[in-house]
Length: 427
Image (cartoon, rainbow, N blue to C red; front, side, top):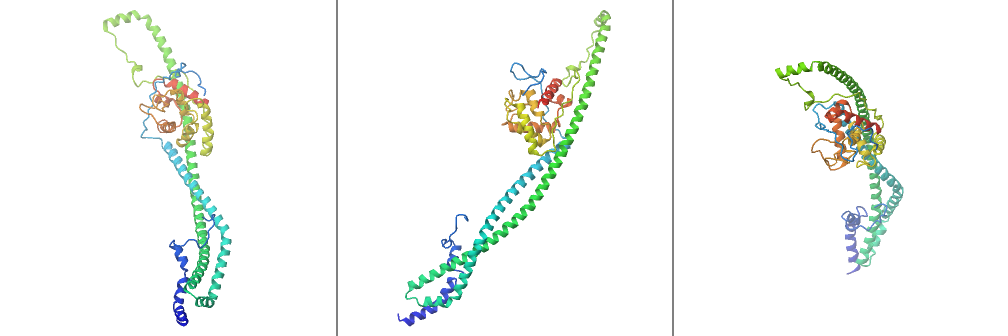
């Protein structure tokens, strides 16, 4: 082909080729990168990519299961104390708010780490982008020389080689500039996310603190009321014991007087027939009066104003010491957490486990250490402890009382009360 025809063809197609090449627009290689066809233009670094207490007759000295006669009412009453419900509600609200706060704090930590990395990369990327801008500018200024270079190509292969070289330079420069823009956008977005997360964390922290305060107040009120009620019932039991003693003495006196007329009474009985007297002790719902004065349970000393973790740590350790060597050994934290969640004297459920099953040694149902109703078995100690403590909270209240003992173990309530109270004092 004559030289002048070759040069004419070159001139006609050069402008279209240069436009496609990206000298004055988007580089071909950059577009190919977006489509996943060319990924080797810009090199990316790797960084970029028990004691037992006094004997009450409820515990076996022969290693056999204790016989208590317990028949605890395990039904949740319809008229649950609103304060009990408030404790459970606020405890759940605190746990949920604390969990959300923990997640947000983890997100904040990740965002801060990402921001630190981006800020560290930014100066170097700004330098690279500045160099790319300068190179782009210089290429545009050198457009006449570049055109001359293409026109001066002696063959099609030289022309293509020059074109690919130029396109490679264009793509690399554009990639550096785009990387800087992406980095700045990511930086701004991450900073906005961080600011939003911090605001959300403040809201959740306030919600958790409010729930904790409400829960603490509810537990302290339950603790105060339970103490007063236990003392009142113990005083009533002492009065009943005194009345029973007076009645016994009166009965002995009456029996002595009646002995003088025994013969006459017998003759009268033979003639008229004996009248059967009502014996209240034969009634299936009969609850015997106390045989002596009963002391209220010792104060638990639970400080509900401390945080959940501190409460569980303190009481978990105390309960573990009490349960050492038993099947329930090591579950002090489980007892303590349940006591916190449901607002119950933390000593109560562990002490009942001793009265009913020698701390889980003799269970009539799987994992049932508390004589807790027929058919109440569980699949783990964790499940059982939580269910029992919740049952105490809903059906019995904060702590042991005379009325609760009569409800839990009607036939032997007095011994059950004394034994369980004594065990609670050991924790």
